[in-house]
Length: 60
Image (cartoon, rainbow, N blue to C red):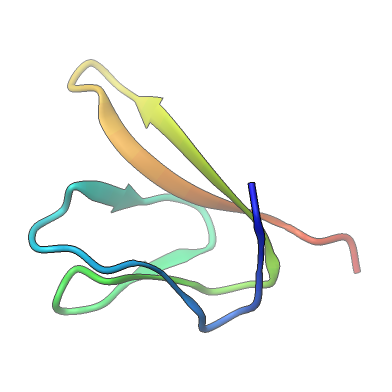
C-alpha cells in the first residue's frame, strides 16, 4: 500500500464500510485515521467478510 503519516485520514465514510485494524483509529463520524507512520493495508477478515484497514508500522 501507500506510506502514510500518523494523524492522516485514510477513509471518510458513512457507517463502517471499512473497519479499523491495527494502528488505525476511528472518529465519531466513522472516519479512519492513522495512529502511527507506516504503510496502509486493506484486507478482508472473518466470516462476515469485513473489510479491515491496518497500518504496518515503518521500521524506526
